[in-house]
Length: 499
Image 1: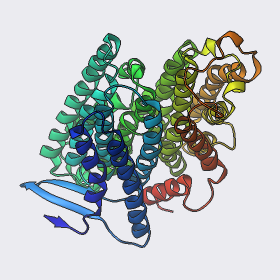
Image 2: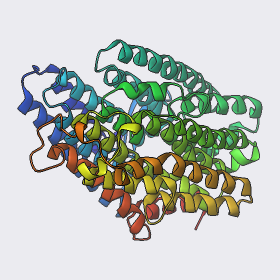
Image 3: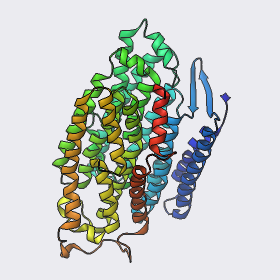
Image 4: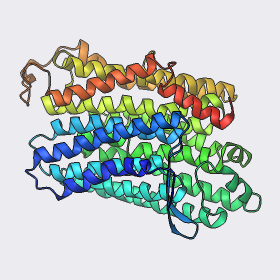
C-alpha cells in the first residue's frame, strides 16, 4: 500500500459505514437510523471541507492499494474531483433531511436509507477515483446501489421501471468494461491526468484507440442520458421524490457526465481528441439530445416526467461544452455540473412537496398552487428561470460561458442550439409558473393531505427546497467571487489550456 493520506479513504467510508449499519438495524429503530444518516452526511461535508482547505494550501491527498501487477485501487484528490464530491456531499445532506420528512411513516425506510448512503458512497468513489479501473468499479457499484431505490415502492410499475433501468445501465456497463479492458491492454494502467500515456500509445494503435474511445463514450452515455440511450431515465421517475432528486442532481446522470469529462480531459486529453477528430460525433449527439429532450418535455403533463426530459436536455450541455475545444466552453461545461444539480434538485423537491401535501402530480392540476405554497413555488420559479437561462440565476452563467466558448471556437451553430433550447425551456417551464401564480386555485381541492401547521408543508420538506433554491440564485449572483463554482471551473479549465 502506498499512500500520502488516508483522508480520501475516510471520506469514502463516511457514508459506506452508516449505510451498512443502517441495513443491519430493525425497521423500528428510527432514531438510531436518523442519527447514522445525519452524522455520516455531516462528517462527509466536514471532511471534504478539511481536504479542500488542505488542497488549496498545496497538500496532496492520494491513497493507493496495489491489487496485482499494474492493477491498483486508487483514490486521488484533484480540483475536478473536489468540485464533484463537494456537490455530492452538500446535496446528500440536504436530501437526507428531505427524505426523512418525505418518508415519515412510510415502509422499508431501513432499506431505503441504507442504499441511499451506499449510493452516495459510489458517487464519492467516482469523484475521487485516481485511475480508470477504480472509476469503473464505483461506476458499476452505483448501478447496484441505486436499483433498490428505483424499485422502492414495490409496485408493478416500479419493478418494471427497475428492470428497464438495469437493462440500460448493465448494458452500458458491459460496453464500458470492454473499453476499460481494451485501454488497459493497449496503454497499461491509466491514471487520470496522464494523457501522455494514451497519446504515446496512439502512435501505433490509432484505429484501436479510436474504437476504444467510442466504446467508453457509449458506456458513459447511458448514465449521461444522451440520445438514444436515455430511455431508462423517464421511466425511473416512479421512484420517490428524494430518489429522483438525487438521481438527477448528483448520482447516476451526473456520474455519466462526469465520466465523459474525465474521458476527454484526463484520459485521452484535449490535444489527442482534437487530432483524432473524436469530438464532432459527441457534439452532434449532445446538440440533438438538448433539442430532443426539450421537445419531449413540452408534451408531458406529468410533473416529474417533464422534469425528467428536461434533465435529458440540460445534462447534454455538459457533453456539448466538452466537445467544443476552448477555455470558455470547458468552463461552462464544468460549472454546469454544479449549476444543473442545484437547479434540478430544487425542482424535484418542489414537485415532491406538491405531491405529498396536495396529492397533485400533473401540471394541469397546479392552478394557484403558488398561493398555497409560496416558498416552494418561489424556489421552483428561481430554478426554472435558471434553466431558461435568465440572469442572475446559475443557469444563465453556464449558458453564457457555453455561448462565448462556441463563438471563440467558431462553432456558431452551437449558439443557435443554446438559443433554441432556451426558447423551448421557456415554453415548458413558464406555463407551470403561470399556472402556479396567476391562475385561480380549485378551492374544493385545497385540503392538505399532511398536517402542516403554520407552514405550507412540513419543515423537513420546506427547508431543503428553500436552501437549494437560494443556492441556485447565489451561484449566479456571486459567480465572480473567489471560491464560487465558476471560479473553480475556470481554474480547472485554465489547467487544461493554460491561463
